[in-house]
Length: 406
Image 1 (spheres, one colour):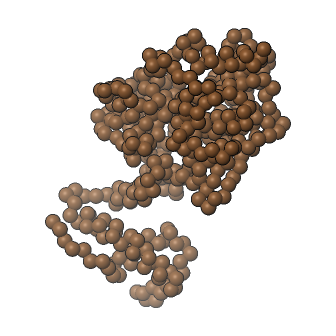
Image 2 (image 1 turned 90 degrees about the horizontal axis):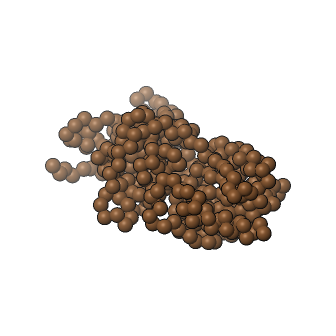
Image 3 (image 1 turned 45 degrees about the vertical axis):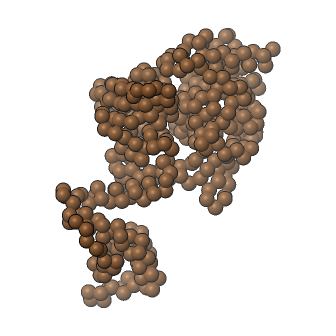
């Protein structure tokens, strides 16, 4: 059925707009005279513009409600319209989340949730891309690796524009099972895995001593306690008189910028760590403290799963030549998002700035190339745990540090 729609909907549409305007223009002045309302010329012009911008959407909503073969919930309509607003930006990192999606998002950022332990990102190719599996989680044990594309969850097709929905589907009660279909570069056939969910508790920092005097710290992501834990592990290693340090950021998907800055503060002395730039060109600089700087050589290990905050720390170390970067080119995420919760429990992420390394390098989409490029052998890339002897990137780090310690 095709019917020609009129361009102007008169008083009815203005009434609808009044509902919209209530939340948008709280400062609107209106005087009620009987059954009429008098508003200022400025507010009238605003409403006419609103009609021009949203009239088509409102009329189509009315048309759908009248002719669609099933009843449509107004709340679903509203969420869909707002999601479309964010999707129109063409930025996979800017998203509107329904209440359930935002609850799921908050749960994960707190560090404990029921799921499989895989960090994902919306890829430019339209696929949901695995940034990295979290260490010692069901996702890692199932063999999921950085770069995998998730195309189905429980046999339902998922795409990058529905990232939050897909993440919510992968989470669930510990002990329950979720089925994933993956495509992997260089694999001809899709990969099907069935994974039992667990309670994911994120321990973001681990440490140990290698070869008697080399400290090793693994940071799996940057949450609100990572810098505090990093300092504790670093102090414990220093009490054991380490002569060099390896900081492993491989498969670290990022997290809190502030936590990253606090860790850089322990390593670099007085230095620009990163600066952001918004749409107006305004720059905001983050500095480390001049009172702190390690007095021994250190190396940072990275790979294609090292993203966001991991790249900020890596870029600061590389640009200042404070340490040596070893591994493969990083993921390449150079955008900064704000996260906000709305009064009804929904929320959103919005990209508000780009970030640059101290030397002004913009790494979004390209990543950071290490000082020493060395990759793992193909046969070891899918292996869950590598021995120190198998880990050629770790061995190269030890070689570099031994030469500097001599």
